Length: 154
Image (cartoon, rainbow, N blue to C red; front, side):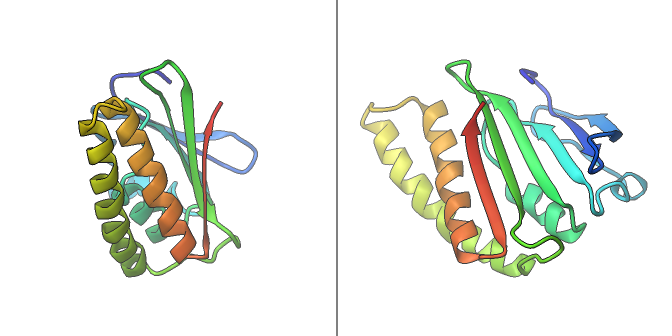
């Protein structure tokens, strides 16, 4: 999925595509009728630049009770990065306000740390962005035990 714009797919448990839609370089927008596909299904989308999830991604997962959400992208070295967040127990989600609060704290911490490493010249900004996302979602999942966060190169 090495695209310059985002594309999203909604899958059922058997891997059948129920719905797909393209978007911009930053997001895919859904209307109310389209969002009915989210409930109890798997949401997969690409992230140009291979960054991890946005807070909006996870808010939508919790709001619509998705089984899981995945993001895939090709990083600056040509590696395919895959991210997954899902409830540890199917159907059991943390409160959205807890996720938002923990996200803000984890983001500030990870961003501050990786910005310093980037400014020291030890990493490229693209690498820092990937690490910021991984650190913050790992921390959010630790604080919200209902979530599992997976980051892997495939």
